[in-house]
Image 1 (cartoon, rainbow, N blue to C red):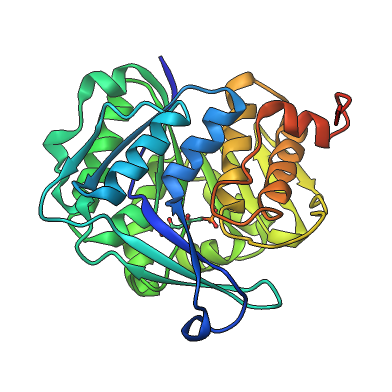
Image 2: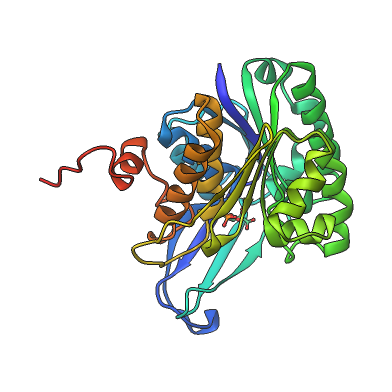
Length: 316
Ligand SMILES: O=C(O)C(=O)C[C@H](O)[C@H](O)COP(=O)(O)O
């Protein structure tokens, strides 16, 4: 039984060897990124059983991502390497103040070859949570039909649907994002969203106003991410404002949201109280930003316990 399954694209991600405008960066480090895969890695490192549905290019980069993912203990039985579609790339620019821009090379994404019929019903039957993001439907309008089929299978087999809008305005316009993602919201059980993203989708950025609006859609678990301002969680009539956890050092903010999401899904899976779950998720977010790369900073469960002072950290 899988705790979490997810559908999405992963890219070979090139992290800059120096800060500043990308055109002057001469060295890059080869890493891996992709919101849904990051989430699966975060869950797997915490000890959950995760599966990833995807397509990669039948090339060296595709093999690299597949091997890495398998090595993280994630099920890759629903991942195929396809000919004629090169594995997508993402180059990152990191400025001195920590701000990030990304430059995608993903127009011919291997995930374009995935069809609704490829979704294996048996796989959904064996899972508890389906995690979706707004990145996958942004890759191509046709992906919306695949998301619809995934939601239908999840509903048929009683999975909870977890959703992070992950709005990437390099991939579509605000209007396109609003139209596609507001359609998904009524099917969602667990919403993990940034305050600014919800402003685009429902025209509200204040967490309490967002919660008021979306709980009426039947979303039972809501976590609104506000970066350095912390997060606000809602479940069963209870609302918690969880203060952010100060990061020792911020070197790369990309991936923090996915780490946070993994923390919330872990808390939900374990039946933890809302407050414990939100603090746990905020702690993971703060750990991710201290490490270069989109998923290298995702902690193991005992790393979070160490950071929370729940266990003694033995250095040597
Ligand atoms: O941009 C994309 O399309 C990607 O999937 C690359 C990144 O790995 C995630 O976007 C990280 O997501 P955050 O955790 O929200 O920072």
